[in-house]
Image (cartoon, rainbow, N blue to C red):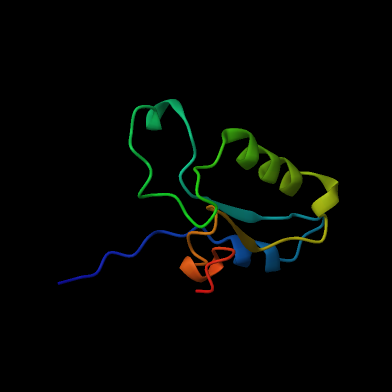
Length: 97
């Protein structure tokens, strides 16, 4: 049985290509974000250590930063905005875990 692998765009490779003008590339991996599509769903099992789902504006702020000149030294990277889900339960403040 063949395992299915997610298709990942070549962001790090694009960052290494020689270019006449600077090209920056980044991948953003959002967690659960409150949208009309998630309205009415029980997302309590989906939240991470922050204990809540993300807001669209929080993700927009990250993307706006990555598109701005303020992130001019960031390229070829992946940015996770998931409320700490990938960090795991040990990231919960005050739990001692």
